[in-house]
Length: 617
Ligand SMILES: OC[C@H]1O[C@H](O[C@H]2O[C@H](CO)[C@@H](O)[C@H](O)[C@H]2O)[C@H](O)[C@@H](O)[C@@H]1O
Image (tube, rainbow, N blue to C red; front, side, top):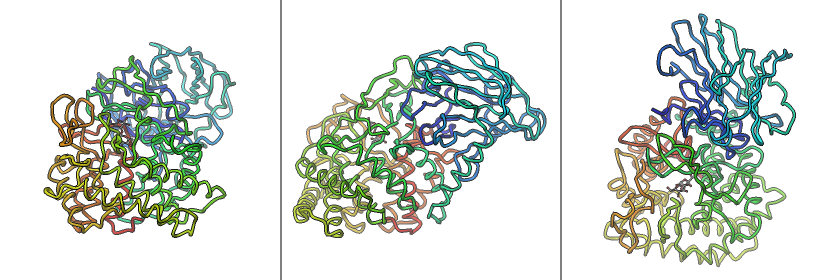
């Protein structure tokens, strides 16, 4: 059986990230960027698609999970410990923030007690497991102590393994067997370099460890959250920071592709890109907890990414603002637990998702009200916002694919219209506050018109609930955002009715589904003549972001104890190192979907602020 998704921990250098399993196997790593081809793709295939396992020498069949693991303090440095009959051993895994050096994954083995025999098995496979590189050994001593050097080359990539342990090749795998005694360390470091360049310097693992720990300690010292859920909030913030692409300020939705929303199903998508929606809400959570630099850098990223005609605004970009994200399938990978296809790229990039305008304008507004320094380009922010508004004004009455990126027919999604209201509302407030030029009365009229239309067409008075789309009978968890964005006050009976309807009709084991999923062709219609569902076969788990939104809303509508209970249950779904995927499979009691997912960790932070009585701007 494949490693459970929740058995992975994340390490990363803010340009890419790796997943380390409890048994010491690194099964996912893309180099040099989040969206580059994987050099370890065992996560989505088999051992033949690449991995790096470092653990006590196995006795008998099967692999042994570490007895304990944790991050060292508030950092992204992972520590796993095994108790064996020979003694106890610790492995420290991390990726140093890159600055100008080559990307590097460092593994330090520390003897704790006894004499423990260790095995390292490194199977490097470039291009998502498809290419077996040429591997050669280079020996020789060096000042840093790492003497054995193994080089793997194929096409544009080269990987360099430096270690004091002696390596040998067998089974198209690079092995090292060694023993550690109490208090002794053995280091292994894997660096990536374009294959046409000269050898990278040998990494000084111990100095890199100190630097990396200092980096995270300094970063987390800026956090302003002091509430009762500090551990969960801090771990979520570190995860969000790890998903930020340092050179540009872009933020990926998750570091993985194709971890399935349904085990064995086809809902497998590539999340290694910057969604305007996900990045905008991430920015909100960072600003609310004291992080301004990331927000400032993302605003810069946004201005660069959408430069040109706002008509061509995409809903997602590459981490450096790339527009070409064509979706394709990697036929040679069998997928996580057989969940095929494995996809790279994302076809949703070409969709119309009108809510994105509201999320972006709201993030710009939040930046303003949280005192984000207007910089020399602030004029550009204003120009951008006016372009976005002109485009939205001309297009908001179009049907769209909505927040959930449905692959079925376009609809008049109520949430998309609510977010149109948000865009107009924040623009009116921004222009009034700054006394800036701009047709305030035009945006005010737009805001009021949208509000009237949503309340008339997106609300079902018979059932006292807002509905997924105009005239539809279906519900949708995105409607839980209505009071959070200020479209209606929390005590409005229509808001309370919607929260109660979601609890009644969309909840499973107390957690929230996004919307009712109907298999293609099962003949159900949503009440508007369109087929129900999202145009995809199969089902999915409960959606963690929506479940946090419900906890948040319960606090807003005056049921905080119930909200807290749900929040605590959600926290209990996190894995042993505090990480959440996108969804939860209630039947199998397992995390599903890409991992770890910003869209789950952001509402965790916002709900913690709301439930703890701290201001949520
Ligand atoms: O469920 C179908 C869609 O699933 C993905 O989209 C989801 O993830 C996005 C990134 O976190 C999020 O912004 C969106 O709201 C979610 O529905 C996938 O990327 C889409 O291609 C797919 O159609």
